[in-house]
Image (cartoon, rainbow, N blue to C red):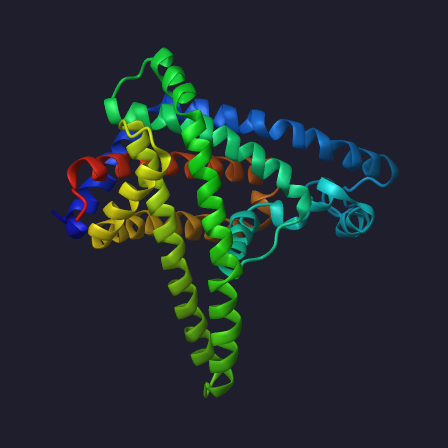
Length: 315
């Protein structure tokens, strides 16, 4: 039977509680994230250090600010992964740029292909252990490792299928809505405000499709860990679950999106009000704390999905 917002709320509370009771799991995921990023950080370090040797970036006005002239000069000559070292990676601009890229379908530089692939492989290895931990409540490192290894191939397969489905959406539905439909409707709007609301509505429509695809494959992962050895069978069960419990699943996504949006607003407000006082090492600490929060929220969301899959039946 379907449960609606009440069931989604109970699942969200359960997921948040499970994440709070698993600090070791969060620490392990943070460690894996850092290890995955180290090779690419080292690849960028060389060009940056070479540039710093020629022209120090510290402004004469402030010892905590980066000289914009140096950064512009560095970006002018940077290539490959080093070209992604832009102001958008600093502070609140980083998560804001990520959200904007998802909504607008911004093409990412080819240099980011390797980090994205490594991240996908790392998460495919982690998902089996994470979902097993939330499904059984067992905290043994040995069981976590065994489950992660056992489910690695199915999780990686689901990740690849999900990436292909998302790519199809961005190549077909996204340009249809945001280019064709918006291009036809916006000139007829009486004001820029109305045109803005139309674009927001189209963002929401496309976001709903992304949410549906994400939900199908997320629940497919849950079913794989639950014992469904056939990837396509698990995907079919995920689709049946989402279709039969669409209102509940949507409510769960909205709850976690509200939590994430509140954190984003708090992050941006603190940075805007703090000004130069949140620069330097303070900005780094706050930024990394936000990354840890995002990882913790992802764990909580996964635990909530496990709970929801165990208490609601697909129609």
